[in-house]
Length: 417
Image (cartoon, rainbow, N blue to C red):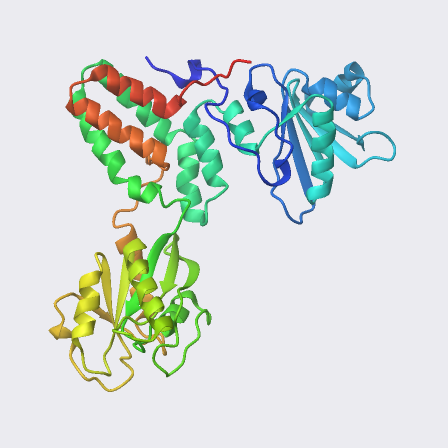
């Protein structure tokens, strides 16, 4: 049986170090077997502590020397997880706390901020350690590529709800399911494999949004209340509101969460025929925002008669949620005349806004997965699942098995010097 635990645990690919590692990266051998590598684990910016992790056969020896200590004595003093507290590079150096998890894995904790961590990393590279990005280090130490991708994705998770789903994948939800598909293929259970593949691919749109928000465009004619609706949805005055039509010329975005799902609302210029160049540019950007969005909130003004432009805007939107706005004013028409279902609201008084958010949350994820569900969450994973399905339809068992193994383990997991 295909078992990820039996596979090598070095990385399948390398990222170019950025931020604190920029300019410190060595040649592509940074993940070669036997190389001692180091990365800054804490993000750039202000903080109480910074952490540099060193991994490799020479990690303990090099760190001991830079802590001005004999390696054997240093190993004895840090045995069984005991901390070493002292100064980096001797009495005048940076105060550090060193933790030795294993003989080939050492963490150095210093004052927060970029300078102390960069100084430690430069001293390590001067002693023969190769600097890399933290993602490289994660991929080198992870048991499977999916595990490494889950760790990287967790660092980008914008909400607690998406983080919880990614944590399930880190704990093996997706890897275990892929292993099960592998076993089913070997047992000839192709119908079970086909059914499970469809379920996994059905969750792919959700998985790809666990680290990036759904884009929701707010569109409509000028002065129907789009900017007021944006402000009501996010709970603060993000967009300028004015009684004059055409106040919004450029795209105004605001990130928030709807039912725990990350959403970026995009308020756009009112769509209408325009001769003035700046307004025309704004209308064109509004049309582009529709094309690039996942959903569209199409706003109608109930206090003014419907126009042909209202209906034309609705036809531009592939995934519309129709909002009949300004219900606090006298009605000029009845929402029942609309061909599409609609929700009545007042952006000014917030009437109907909570229901709008509830309906939008249900539209984004109609069937939220149960805890522990397997969810593909990167484009690489989704592409390989599509490849498995294609091979399955072509009765190509070896192609299916190869793609499943690549999904979990990546390409060549080891890089030779």
